[in-house]
Length: 185
Image (tube, rainbow, N blue to C red; front, side, top):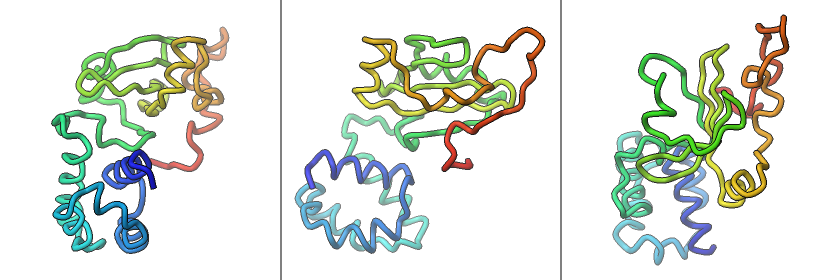
């Protein structure tokens, strides 16, 4: 695996996007190049971590985070999020997109291109004011360029009626589709 592929796989583990058993028991032994990428001490710590020990997994994820992000972004709100994140819209998060993120471009009042003010990561954000949720999807460099250069937005929220302007007389509509059918949280 290349360094970029290793970095991506480890970030997925840190963000809890994949199962600890699959990473520690199945993937780790088949990935000898990881030893050079992590260094002997961190690689040994990863090999020694039990997949069913929550506190050890937490400590390992923190160590990997520091290794993958040596600039010290541990305080960043979004760095540990999976690539797709749903957050409840409530008193603690009501100003999230305007306090922790910079809005760079709006597709409509509920769909925005945002950048984290701590780490600089770009996200495609949807604000669902019917069911009171934020939906955020981490953007790849190519997707970011598509939005900025050609006004081409990812299709994640295209069938999600709660984030599109309504027709007169149809202000209240039920959700037709979840943005991500394979995710229920």
